[in-house]
Image (cartoon, rainbow over all chains, first blue to last red; front, side):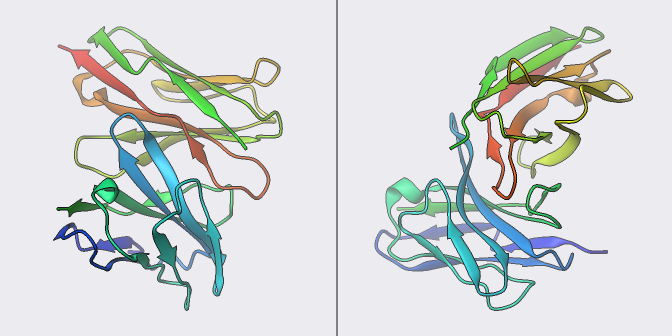
Length: 112
Length: 111
């Protein structure tokens, strides 16, 4: 069955380190998204991509970057992790830009 | 850009009663309005969605209504059950822009 997979499920890192969170989908969706979820803020958009080589900034993109070299993967990189980036990160994909989104299981990141 | 407000932030109902969650959006060009349910420790899952050319949509005990003039939409859950307890998120989007989510409503169904 097609799926969207995030790894790792849990990550603890130190302030200042570079961290990459993986997102892999087998739906063959062109559109992929990264959100962070924090208590009281809901789901906030970090970056998104409409296809290979396309990336766009979302509402809370500072300190994060993404790259899209193939259809299946959209890794999220924290260039220099900060305590404010402690959060649960969700990757999502959809067939169309405003279409139904499917979410991965999430990555809980703790920056100490 | 789009802004979505969701109310209430928490809601407790007795099992069997109805629950209503309301959202307002700011941009009249928005045309797609999904609702997601997120159980504790799990991923958000789409439960129902509606597009701007439709005023109401039902799926068993769940319904969504849309008032484009007032720019608000609501989720209605009838005959609530303990397994309906979760956090519910509304969202809105328009044209080629990604979804903007509300901050969520924590629904507790008391047996």
